[in-house]
Image 1 (cartoon, rainbow, N blue to C red):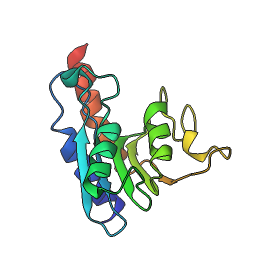
Image 2 (cartoon, rainbow, N blue to C red):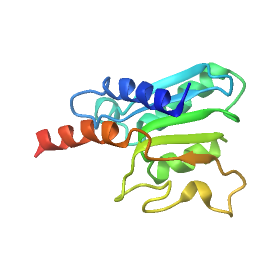
Image 3 (cartoon, helix red, strand yellow):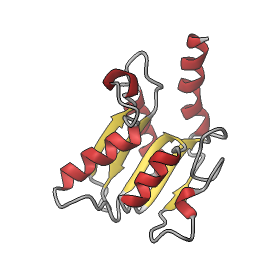
Length: 149
């Protein structure tokens, strides 16, 4: 799968977000391209501040692998640049690559506001590609927040 294909899959996951949740989607694929998990934001639906799409997808991917929490060699694709919590979780899970769509200048932690995943003090630093299908990823967010205003 190309990075664009991964982001399209994440966009499909984002469409499954509940009406009160920000439409962000994530997918985790193994090094061989096998899809391990996909998820949409569910903070409101689950009343859980950690229920970001990335966290839910990481949890499900680890369960799918069944050999612990390490997701070495896997790629996580998400429609929006991860926040600090999610960026930290990606590092801790040993994700090999992160691909994201829209940049998030206010809370992004993979190059915008912070750059958690490239911090040289950490023992693991995934490869990163941002801005993939950026306009397509930004559109659902803009529509969601326009409806809320």
